[in-house]
Length: 360
Image (spheres, rainbow, N blue to C red):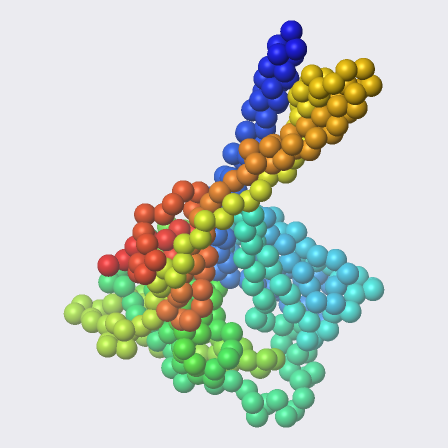
C-alpha cells in the first residue's frame, strides 16, 4: 500500500514535468531567431526643436521585428510601426519639458526574438542650417573630406545583383549612400582607416537606372561632406574589376574562432515544488512512527519541494552552440545554433542572414 502511494507520487511528478516541455521548446526556439540587421536609419529633421514640432523616423532592416527609437534629451521614446516588409516608421512630437538641441542624436533598436541590433543616427535632428549656425567656427577647419567615391557595378541591374560602393576620405567617420530608386540609405562600414565600403543587394521593388544619382555622405562629429557618384551603375561590355576592387575586404567574411556549448538553466515553478513536495511527503511517511512520522513527512515535503523545483529547472534547461567568428575587418560576431554546426574551428565562413555559410 505504501509502495503504491510512492509510485503514484512519482508518476504525478513526471506528469506535471511533462507539461512543461513545450515551454522548454519555446525557449530553445528563441535561439534560432536570425540576427537582426539595420540597413538604414533616417529622420525628417525639424527647423527648430520647439514644442509641437514633429520628428519623423524611418528604419530599414530585417522584417518581422520590433523597432523603437530613443532620442537624446527627450522625455519619451518612439515605437516604430512596420508599414511594409523591413520598413518601420514612427514620429515623435516634441514636448515642453524636452531638452532636445542641435547636438542631440537618436538611437534605433531592432529586436528579433531575443536579439537586438542598434544604430545611431548619422544626421542631425535639427535642420542642417540651424546645426551649422550653432557649430563653432573653429570646426569648419576640421570638416571631413571625400577623396574618392566609386562603385563596382554588376552587368545587369536586376534583383539579386549587388552594387558595391567604396568611399575614401577622412577616417573615423560614419559613411552612407543614397541611391535614386531605392528606399532608405546604404550604411558603409570603415573596413580600414579612411576606407568605407557598403554592399547593396538589388530588390524586386527597386527601380534603379544605370544613370541613377548616387549621393555619398561622410559625417565626422557635427561636420559632413558629400559626393555624387560619377560613373554608371551598370558595367559596360568587357568591364573588369580593378585589382583594388577584386581584393576588397569582405566585411561579412571571417574564420571560426571558437564553438562553445552553452547550457541555459530553466526556471522552476510552483508545479514542480508541489509535485516534489507530494513525492517527498509520501517517502517521509514511510520513516518512523507517530510524531517521528510527522516530522519525517514535513522534512520529506520540504526536501521534495526543493528537489522537484531543481528537477523541473533541469528538465527545462536548454543547450545551444555559440559560434564565435573573427571577421576580416578585425571585429567579431557570435551566431547561435540549436544543434552542433557542421564545421570546425578554423573554417572560413561568411555571415548571411544570421547564419554562417562555409566558403572555399
